[in-house]
Length: 461
Length: 115
Image 1: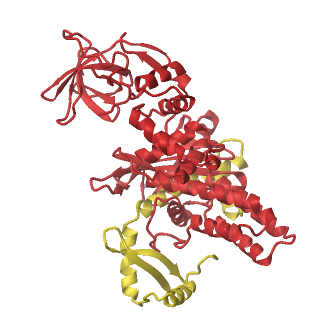
Image 2: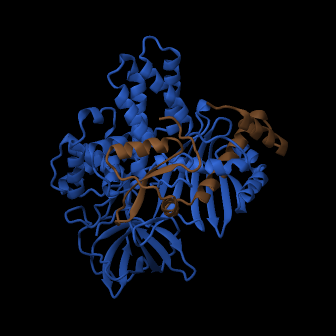
Image 3: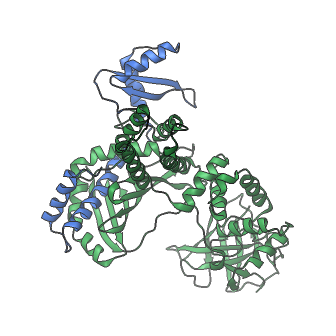
């Protein structure tokens, strides 16, 4: 089993032979206040001497603690007090009859450096080439277990990327994209790495792309020069099509229409793969296919079209990235769909939505209206970035709106009564509605921390 | 590439076999273009059948397969609309909004053509 730490450190190195003192068998320690006894399920096996990095995830009513180590959550009793959220480093002393004995380790933390990465590579018997160090550094920054197998598979995947696709794409974004694809059971192709890599590096927004493309197309149609009639005809059709993806502002009475438009957007983003006419308002549109067809039809026609073709290619790539994100098969039981929503294009307003889903035993994905969590990040001209967490239980809707500006928070707070009315008009029960002072930057596709901000740990301390 | 016009009584669906071997609706074309699709299909040697009830049943089945219930999309739209209303109201007034200001902001937003 491969565990990796949640709190800094050379993730994935714990317990591997030849790395620091982590592989040393545990010395027979007498029971001490620092000993934890944890329950483990049958089939889960830890090696004596293995060092685990994790956090204290919670405290239960009976006084036991929940400890999270990578994908494993263990219930443990401790004679010393632990704080929820506290990082934890323990060494496995032994496992018997479903009981795991863990020794809390004292450790000395120090900022991580390129030298630590080099040492880790040496431990894996890998040559210290510039390419290897760069790749290993990006892996550590993304929390990717630094194993010989992971290093080899990522190296092989990234080697497929043609130079033109890799151009302008930083290595951490390429590594993050390749790792996401690999761990999500998605095809590890150059095209997919490029699409997701650009998404990770630049966070392109559908709304901004549509607005730029729309403006460029209108400009070309209004200034035809010597452009062919058929070309102009094709270009003139697109702005109207792009307008179909805009979520218009409006009151509660419009939420039905806007809901269907969100459904259409979800189809473009690969969340909805069904084509039922009753659910969507524009069942036949496939924006990605339309862009591909149009680009193919326009290619080579006119030297002045490069700009607009480039914008279309960017839009296509973003749509491909969204579809990949939403087709991923995560290991965890809970995951999120991701949707970008264009709002007022002329003002660059847009929204991002994360919809939690559960993976059922048969592998299907479930969004349960009775146990729902949705997160929003709405970028507006007058309120700035407004975040929103929406939870539903028993048809009761709880909403928390967040802003990092107290003035905006107060403004929103005074309007919550109206939100309650809107929710009730939509056929749901308004529950706890609040406005809090908090920033929200969205959910990153892959976690990443710069190497300098990570910590290395002396496990022999 | 123009927007399909909904016209009652005309709908063409393209059928295929899903992963589990079941019949799936692969695409649908409502309104006038439906006839054109039928002609294209006949021209390509495909079988074209006219069975309104079967089409209705198939579409109903597809609707059940939505990954996110439609009412959840409507709820999300309610929240986004509310934020947009607040945004409009804020542009109309620097101070805290009254109910009237919010309503006025929403009306302004509905009347405007963002495109």
